[in-house]
Image 1 (cartoon, rainbow, N blue to C red):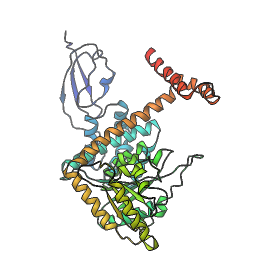
Image 2: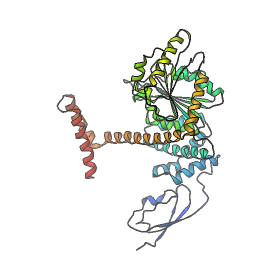
Image 3: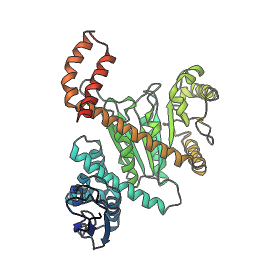
Image 4: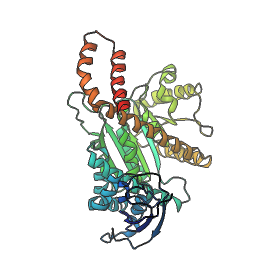
Length: 430
């Protein structure tokens, strides 16, 4: 029998009054308007109907920028799914202020938002999620009124130590800002394996770009991850876009043959190599070359011009043996000099050509969609590992099993299996 009790519930987000047909103590109510006090109700088979009586929202009357906050409000009323985020939105005025300042283009607000994203503190992570959801909605709204398929162009930059990545970004970034672009740089520095700290010295190699009003450089520690790209890198890119930066450069630290995770979060992957970077066979061996959309031979000036020309020819030959990842783009090999600026305009022309071709074929849109899926699973993997390590039964067993593995009593694989059984067993029992 359908429950005919009626209960009024007020929404946390829209302040709308909801008239719910259902028993207030037995029914679980969830509507497309959002979530509120009804999350305490229980489901016991009642048929539920709901109607919404709109009421003026007073949650954000103190805001001076109602248009920007409206994006934030719509996001939570439609997309949010946790009570924590709702409470943050309702109570934490600093989150609302940060969001408003971010979309206005405040550099200080951008820095604080990235710090929140990088934090591992539960409360700060919730605040970061709240801001990110608002930014995502804000970007979608702007994009719906734009003819471009994407509002920004994401460029990944990688290469061996000493290739001149920071010097190249300084020259390339100034070239772009002079053309009217807003450039954001996420520069990753290696973290110490002993102390865990980072020098964060890349910014000191960009003295002109770091004081440019149309550029923003964010040094970031690698945290021990391969290539320095972490789960927060992708979220920092989203914040850059929300702040109005249309060219985003992600620079990784010096890499080897397999640390090219950055290719899964950018539109175009650029591999920077120095002259005398190996012969043709070495170019084929490097796995990182397979994902490069453009190979840039840097330091093509002075006595190194001849060597740069030779390595350019060898890499052009090497790329012929590799399967192309795109049906519309053939990887290019070009020479530049970050000192004399020679070759930089031609490199930018190649990048524009890449973006136009990938946009016309819709490969760029599909590429971003696939990247979002990849990073969803990367987040899941990281969260599951954190959950596994913090599990009470696992933590109790770890010291003993680590000792047995160290002494050669059992194999590492067997120890891992035993820990997994402890982890799964308790979950099944509970």
